[in-house]
View 1 (tube, rainbow, N blue to C red):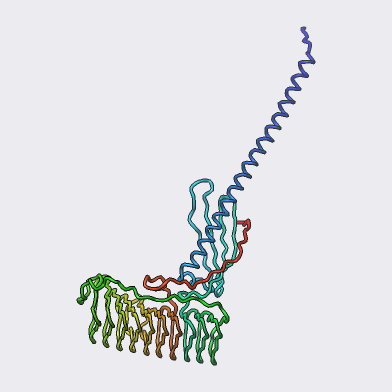
View 2: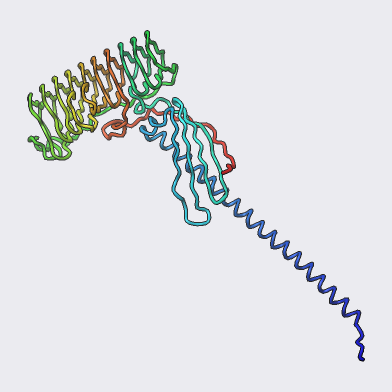
Length: 398
């Protein structure tokens, strides 16, 4: 039988090598784990920064909507709106933001959460708007006076005082620089002592080269026309146009009774516009005066047009009774540098802006509609004052 002699020294060396390899493995695994953790931390930090940028982008979109979009202001006043952006970016930091806007009077609370991967960041703040002239059913300068049975669906702003007769109802808030006075059985939420708001001056868009334009021939075929004197539209006649048409009138415009204007027609007078009773509208019509506009009774009473009518004057607008009454589809907006007077039974879907005062006879109804708020003929809303509170940033758990 043959015997082998064990080399103790060699065996000890092998064991030592195994121990060293094991230690190296442990150290290597730790280093891999540490490196992986650092990579994850770096990715999380990167995603957190990207999510913060997205949250701020959503907040700025909300600010832009509230300061530039009168319809959005009206839609979110005392209401809540929210939306989610599409995916932004195409790399590892792509993500979305979700914005929530909660309105209360002239104040809005905005929260915007950006999400990238598992990282969520939120910004939260409040924004206050002075009464915008185009976000109210009525906005006027010195004073607002309404007789009994006035119904306003929307808000009212005035740089002076507001007075309401009995049985008056306002669905929004009356914001007055002065005082708000109501008589019995009226429901008129109010805020007094608000800051003054600048009401921009309306100027007719007169073409200095209009004298070279052709005279109008009915029906109009689109384009621009010029009348060297006054324009008289005789009674009991329909005047129509095909395509957008503008008539520049060097003097005044007189529209006889029972006249219908049909089509996309804009009448611009350097002086006054006088409209006799029972005028009707079919299509988008703008009547712009360098002086005053006087409207006879029953204007637009049978109108079937859902396209807003615009009446704007550098002077005053005086409307007799039943303006728009009897037509559920009739929309109209009135803008005057001077006073606006609305006769008994007036019914408007749109808004009224006066650089002076507004006087409403009894049974007037105005339902706010922002359809003409961005009309190119109207001056920009320079009176809108924005106050943005401090932003707070949070890590948001989703």
